[in-house]
Amino acid sequence: MMGYVLLALAILPVLIIGTYVNRKDRNKEPASILVKLFIYGILSCFIVLFISDILSSIFPMLSSKVEKTSLVEMLIYAFIGVALVEEGSKLLMVYNIGYKNKEFDEIYDIIIYSVFVALGFAAFENILYVLGNETIEASITTGVLRAILAVPGHACDGLFMGYYLSLAKISELQNQKEESKKYLLKSLLIPTILHGTYDFCIFTGMPIFLLVFLIFVIWMYINAVKKLKLVATNNRSLYMQNKYCAFCGAPATGVFCGHCGHRIQ
Image 1 (spheres, helix red, strand yellow):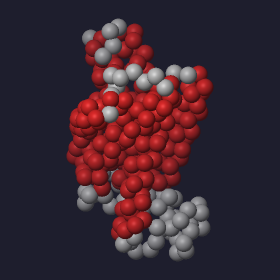
Image 2 (cartoon, one colour):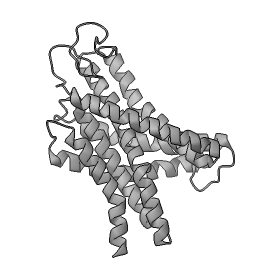
Image 3 (tube, helix red, strand yellow):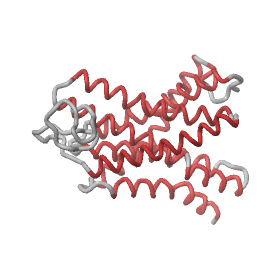
């Protein structure tokens, strides 16, 4: 019985965030696509394991089994051994299953796709962490902490990934190939930087970095929710003839948006 309770504790935050993000979409995506993306998010965990094994065999410092004794080692491991590998694996799934999908016809679509891949990854990881403790108390503590930190963190990474993928698609449709490549790169780099910062602060275990971690997480959550609401509220078709701001969705004719000031794609 307790096993089911712990399983629910691991899955519940994923369901809550997924439902919240999906409800913001006025033109709902087919459930089959969302389920597929979620499953591929789970599968991305195995890609991470495969890549991590290869990297750790070449660079032992990137192995989770090797103790990190300096801040530099922790920094490299957090940003490359964990963040880059995980976000790269998730992006691979989002790009091939979501970005190239014919259902991707609105700005908000790719944000949903990216978040659902991230949530699939988070769900699998969460189950392993919550059910992998020796005591029930430790499992509950792990589940609660991850419900308010790790799972929303993965969702935020996915949201920023989707945002830059939307800009890449807009640039692509307007034959701005160099701009599209730049945003594709950002769709990997920004989530990696966010994820790496999150992990590095935790890995150090130092009070000063834990304070930075708290401030960083609050900042990330606030900005992610703001961006989500802004794009959802001003969601537009990718195939509008008139130019519009990808950040706020407002119609525009100049180089910069008169509503929010961002550069028009």
